[in-house]
Image (cartoon, rainbow, N blue to C red; front, side):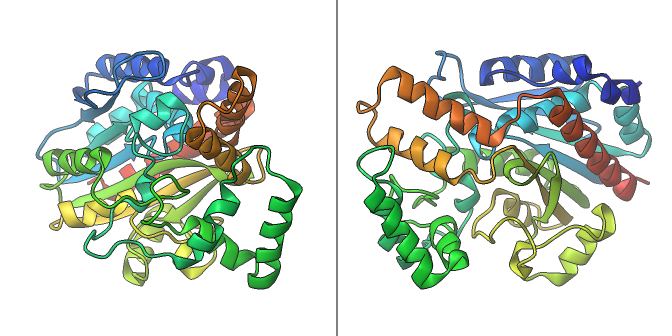
Length: 370
C-alpha cells in the first residue's frame, strides 16, 4: 500500500537519487513497471557530467482521448530535479493512486528532467546559462531589466569568495533601494547578460521547444489540465508552498486553481509568496499550446535547509564564468553547496516531500476525474 511507502523511510529513500544518471534510470524503470508509454527526447551533442546521454523523458499513463490530464514535471531548474524526480518515481510506484486515476478517467503525464543538462551538471540553468522559468516569453519583447545591469558585476565578482568591498557595495545598494527592489532587480530576469544570473535568453531554448512539443503531442487535445511543477530552494524546510502558475494577474484562473488545491495557493503577483513574480515561466506554455483546455497549475516549491540559495547561485555562476580559477577542492565545495541549496539528503525531508506531492496529485485527480 502507498500509505506504507510514505511511512517507510527506506522505501521513500529509494525513490530519490544521488545524480541525474541514477534518477533517469529509476524513472525509466518505474515507468516501465507501471506500464506507461515512454518517450525519450534526447539533447543531442552534449554529454552529461558522467558522459551519459541527456534527455527529457516522458511517461504517459491513461488513454490519448482522456479529457482530463494531470501533469507532474521535474527539473525545470536543473539541480532542483533531485526532488521532482523522486516525487515522480514515488507516483509511478503507487498502484493505489495510479488505479484511482485510471478509474476516474484521468491521464497522467510525467515530464522528467525538463532541463537535463542542469540536472546532470549541477546547474540551475541550462546548457546556454538560460533560466528556463524566464525563457517562455515573447522574444519580440525581450526582458529588459536595467536595474540588473547595475548589479551584474557586483553579484558576479572576479574572485570568490567576494571581497569585503564587494559585500559593502551590495549592502549599499540594498540600503538605498530596499531589500524588495534588490531581489526584484536580481531575480526577475534579464536578456542582456548571457553569462549573468537569471538570464532569459534571446530565443526559445531546446527545453522550451521540447516542452512545447510534448504538450502538443499529449495535452493539446484535452479539455482539462492540472499541472504540478516541482521546485525547491525557497520557504520553510520541508514545506511545499503552492504557488499559482497561471498567467500573472488572472484572478479567475487563481480561483479555479484554489478550487483544486486549496485556499493556501498563493500568487506571487499578489505579493504573498516566498517567490518573486517572474516573466516567462515554463507552465505558461500550456496556455499557448493547449488553447482548448481549461488549464490550471501550481509550482510546488519546497524549502530546504538553506535560508536562501542566492550565495550558492552566485558561487556556481562565478565557477561557470571562471572555470580555471578554482581548485578541485573549491569546485567540489561550490557544487556541493548548490546541491544542498536545492535538496536535503535526509529521510524526514524526503518523506515530507513525497507526502505533500501525493496529496497535490490526489487533489488534481479527484478534481478533474469523472
